[in-house]
Length: 399
Length: 79
Image (cartoon, rainbow over all chains, first blue to last red; front, side):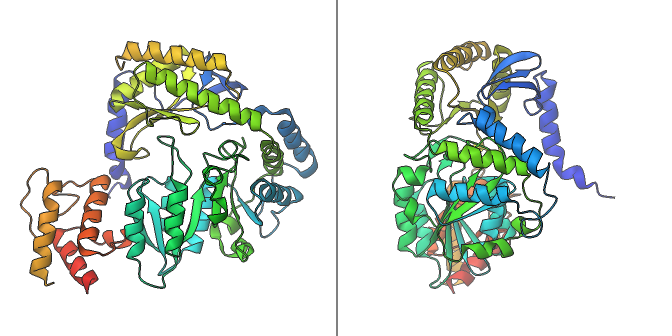
């Protein structure tokens, strides 16, 4: 018998080697108690959270919580069915309406996760003979959507407008084209030049899908994302988003002005063949999305946090993923996995949680300590965080 | 362009990516012999695409494991 697991041996060995150095498993952290959007108890220690996607701090919003509790009482704990059968409740329609209002678009379709939104939309709209042109640093859910569909998949170098145009230029006449971009790329926290890229895509007759998962809620005048910030949201055919970041719960969605968009509800398999979100989840999401429409002050504070942390870490000699703060993600580049894990652990001992990111999730084989800020981080917490980084960085010998 | 001329051009394009100076034959594999990782593959494919003004989609790349298969694919794509 061939052991089907033997293909994982190199990864198993890598993990064994890493853990044999005595370092805490960076992928085994348990939060025993969550005190607020920015603080939790980890290993019995009060820990500042700097590695969540809770950008707007909505997880403990009293209105959001109240809406979820009410929905549990009124509609029960789950729908036990597909959206197209018994799984569409008033709450599912309400959250889709909230998304239409938030983005000022005609159609919104809610999936059970953001991953499924990309998987479903991309694999369904780009079929046999069509072409998908996408950034090489695209999220796993985008790649998996490509893999699940039958279109020809053509990647281009990250954020490289010329490389994208060269590929568009060579596509056979008459073929359908979907260009897939992200507003914020979550590993380095850099944004895409959407204005220029979308103009090129449109020149070649492509439809454009932009994943705004990491920008919703705080980039753009109304928090609609990078495309809004750059004034090209009306050129985007499909916006993909998630409830599991700024919205503070779980779920994914696609919003669009395409006149035939509603047919997706019948043809998109990751939408049809899975149970819909629980009533409490859609109720919290709808409440949160509507509150995010009026969150200008929180947006301003989050940007301030991002600028202060970026400047502070840079000043102390850390190598960062971007020259300037471009989003709520500040990525600190580690020299290698061993020292990255050691630094991660040293920060945890200081009482700070960040994400340790490593290949294949990261570009160019990098090991990153990914910090994601929250609008609920106080200015004081950000200063505390910078001090923790300085002490841990010196201890591990990175600065 | 015939197969020999295409092969010669591709051989020249491989040079900068052939860090260990492996001797290239039709049987040389990109993953096994040349040890190309995903980033190298992207840069190398882009170089081939630009040289021949073609698209080699990832679907097509999945079928190409060796140098000989790449030459055949490019000849075919150039028609």
